[in-house]
Amino acid sequence: MAPRVVSVEADGGSRGNPGPAGYGAVVRDPETGEVLAERSESLGTATNNVAEYQGLIAGLTAAAELGAAEVDVRMDSKLVVEQMCGRWQIKHPGLRPLAAQAAALVGRFTAVRFSWIPREQNRHADALANAAMDAAAGRPATTAAATGQPVTAAATGRPATTAATGQPSATAATGSDPATAPASWEPRPTFTATRLILVRHGETPYTEQRRYSGRGDVPLSERGRAQVRATAARVAELAPSVAAVISSPLSRCTATAASIAGALGDVPVRTEDDLIECDFGQWEGRTFAEVREQWPGEMDAWLASPRIAPPDGESFTQVAERAHRVIAGLLTAYPGETVVVVSHVSPIKLMLRDALAAGDGFLHRLFLDAAGISVLDMWPDGGVAVRTVNDTAHLSTID
Image 1 (cartoon, one colour):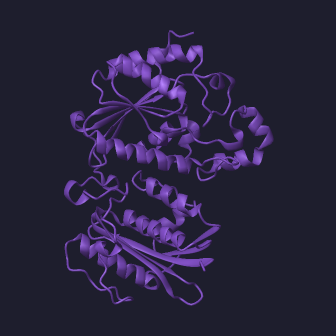
Image 2 (image 1 turned 120 degrees about the horizontal axis):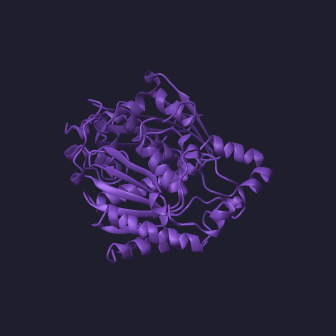
Image 3 (image 1 turned 30 degrees about the horizontal axis):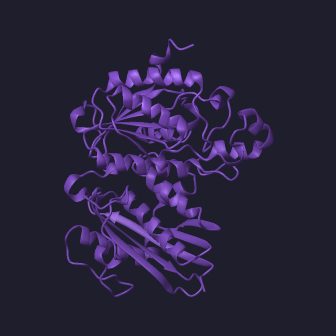
């Protein structure tokens, strides 16, 4: 029988911050203290906070696998606890994807409660984390004081993974952990960056009518098709050499992508489901005014937190997780190349928010025009340069 309530104790750390990193997590029966599951893994090179979030994610995942309905999370990381409770902003872009992943896991339970505990009350998870750090540093595995068993990355049955992407780790060799990217005022060489040209699709009838347009497959309007032709010419000017055009599967994006690909000499177009627009649930197809009138409380809550979804819809936190997967995949597949990404307002806003290390208020303050263009440069060590946001000069002659 699955336990209804479990407690999760999680910890993580690094030797050097950044340095050899690892995490530990323990799932217990809160009444008896019985250990129901342990998780521990080395992370290569990462920061303390990245490792702490990974410990939380591992603990929540283990609780979900056990079938728990409610979880009491206990951690000695004040930062993680306060951020997950929504009291502190998540300012570091390298932590946002991890927080989004943790928030998505939280949504799988009936209730999750977070509490801070002193380090001495978190000894079991701390011991597991220290053993994982030893493994990351290439030292012999230490013995977890509470279990008497050696704990290494191999003991988990999974390969070591990077802190931000969940992909096989190369950070020890490359220093590519995005949470530890060096800050610099100097211009970086663009030839080593992967350039992402982010394009919002052209207008649709819903755009003109000011309606929520999420998963519904609304085609481009006549004006939208004219915008797309102008956008294709502009992209060809910006990037005469492009490795690929990646598009949301919805027709308003695939039509935009096809036009751009043609202007670039028939560059291959690939659709990516994770680039689809936010699911607006019951608000889909309704005007902004109708939603404000019929769901005033729900709209206020939605505007106040990216973790809140429209009725029967999807939260921005969930969209951010998708957007992060897309970027991680593009950086792996197209290192040092230029890629055109054709998507919708919400995924592009979230990519720009994280690139600029902006707060959540950014999502409701940034306006992205239909057929607008934004440009990001991203380096292997996690460095980011935002070159352009919402360029619409190419649309000036369209009535």
